[in-house]
Image (cartoon, rainbow, N blue to C red; front, side, top):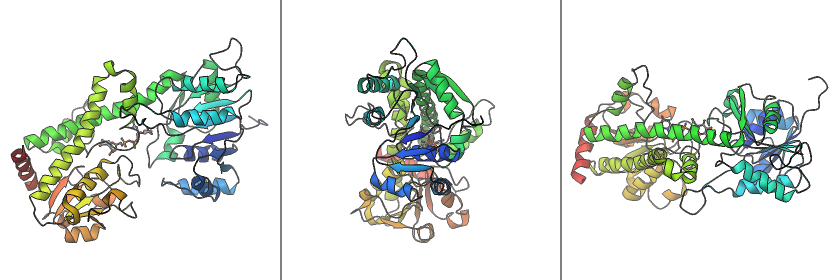
Length: 436
Ligand code: SAJ
């Protein structure tokens, strides 16, 4: 629209979602102020640099900072639109209940600067009802403003819930092209948020109410968790039967209506292993499947530890290479990583025999300290280690040709080497059977 004034945007939380979102909004021409509680993050961004690894993000941030568009600070700046993208971890009660402290703190900071006409958007993955809770907190802080859903006439501000759905490693592309659910506290709020997202999202934006949008986000990740659990359960059944799960799955997937996912050493990251619990904790009596899937995926980690330990014990004196620590392929994110847990447990059990290869880590995480385990590169591991345990499907590992591993004992938890001779599998099943 010619001559229109673009809204100014304040993005609260400059992490894996907030920073790429701020950069993309800035690229579309809007003025963006970023806020983060970590001084180092703020300083890094203001230098035009980034504190996270994400494809093409460095160039984008450098470009928009050079044009003076996003500025970062430790305080929330006044704006027309506020986008909250802060973490929603578990509370420390051991019950998998969500901790909304960061969301509510962000909302408290927003409350200090909002004015009539502003739009507040929550993007953080949140339990159902969080957006209304945030609205109630804003209402408490700012009784001078009429809040949506709490007043008879036209509210002074709009509030919506709009979750992201991006995949690490593809964030910039997916932030722009994925469809989005936009849940307003009222339909009017949803329409206002829709107009904002249409400025920089090419995917289809579908409006709904805030609670449905909150639930949709949780459902997406629970759906994936349940499907990965099915694949992981098959892998454990196949191990017990001495079958090759990769072959069974690829044969089954030839059925036109079957599409089984890929087994691995368990489910990692801070989304799929976390978000299903937000549904379970809200409705425990109605979510046995979702709860069980979480248990199956966590149980797979222990299955892998048992099977890997049996392989190490069956090869006394051999050096063991653990390939990968990241929670998935080709990224430098080690949070909630099953590979990291498996490798660290083996390091504690078998000490200096364990050699860890992780091209995305400058050093081993702290839990390896004192175990005697060493970090090495793929070439040295292939020269020195007789046993290879594949924990992450990094491209670097996939490209190792059969000639360099045919004579090794291999436990491939990701199925990256379908041509690997399988003599080891029967021996390990036998070891496990003997161990009960
Ligand atoms: N995994 C398997 N087998 C598979 C697929 C994944 O074992 O077939 C494992 C991965 O190795 C990893 C974990 O699951 O440990 C999660 O990886 P992922 O690639 O499935 O998902 P995330 O955590 O990187 O991102 C997910 C995505 N959600 C869905 O695909 C439904 C992403 O779109 C969301 O934006 C993101 O969660 C989020 O932020 O919620």
